[in-house]
Image 1 (cartoon, helix red, strand yellow):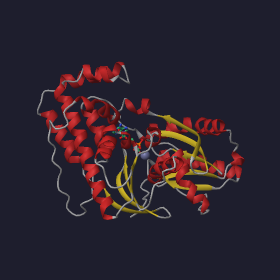
Image 2 (cartoon, protein in one colour):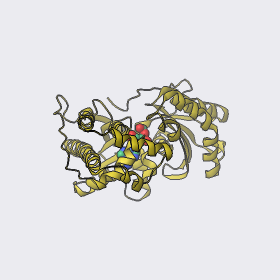
Image 3 (tube, protein in one colour):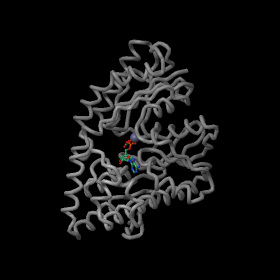
Image 4 (cartoon, protein in one colour):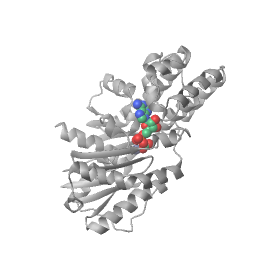
Amino acid sequence: MRILAIESSCDETAAAVVEDGEQILSSVVASQMVTHGKYGGVVPELASREHLRAIVPVVREALLRSGTKLEELAAIAVTVGPGLVGSLLVGLTYAKSLSFASGVPLIGVNHIEGHIHAVIMEARRDGTPVELPALALVVSGGHTHLFEVTEGYHYRLLGKTRDDAAGEAFDKVGKLLGFGYPGGPVIDRLAPHGNPRAVKFTFAKMKGNALDFSFSGTKTAVLRWVEARDMESEIAVRRALLHENPAPSVEQWLAVTPQATLDLVASFQHSVIHELLTRAAASAETIEARSLIVSGGVACNSGLRERARAARLPYPVYFPTPGLSTDNAAMIAAAAFPKLAKQEFAAFDIAAQANLRLAG
Ligand code: KG4
Ligand code: ZN
């Protein structure tokens, strides 16, 4: 049973063919990093245009690499939301047309459910299936959410960010310090070179739901720290480096980053990880979770992986391999597989939903 999945919710055009919900036969991701990098963030209009350019060759490549013909598919899965509506529309419209032309049924998938299923799929394939109930921490550029996952893949929202997503905080700090966009991967590589305890960040105590996150305070603290120092020239040097070379090596970054800034970067990452893991562990305890799933782009973060491992939590912690952490279509196929079994097909009038929720 092969599913072709299409994902275009943000700035990656992706298609994949997955067999029986676990074997990835092909996974193609066309990144728009180069397009958006110079603007310091995703520009929605440019994203839609790039998706339009990429969608046909990306889907064709995914089918070709997997040796699958359209009519051999059991279903065509597609992300319906959440995401940028202009981007979602490209993938959704193309998936509908393929489904209409071939008679292969269509399955609509929530992007966040895809991130969770990336982990469930890999764990099952590796012979160490995720035991439910699980606590899922989805951390990316757009979301920072805690869900309870119960049998039959039902979801309950336990906590979420009240302001910036964790990845967004990484991106804003990266941009502010002259490390370009996206900030997460650069900060991750530089953090081990700084002292994580050098700068203290205090987190506001949450009124209301104690499992909610807030990252705007940390971001503002970084801004204040920068404003209190004369950092303009060092930031300008880093921007110039990026202008010459869009992907500098760690050594090149280190050569233009003073120790105090490395300490700031390390401390920022340390405090974000602390915030994520503390809330995740508290939520897992309240639902008596039997496993913890961490997924989404920020799940790539090596500091987060290390600290989650070092915490010796009383249940297994699952992270996706890096290729399945950031946006991809294999995870959409994985999330569609249980829906195929239940014949949960979508009608042709299904609409893209920028703010689609996974659970209340
Ligand atoms: O899941 P994703 O590809 O797209 C969204 O759905 O948002 O996540 C992208 C986000 C960006 O904010 C990026 O900075 C962050 O994930 N990210 C990281 C790392 N790799 C990507 N953040 C921290 N450490 C990383 N290694
Ligand atoms: Zn995502």
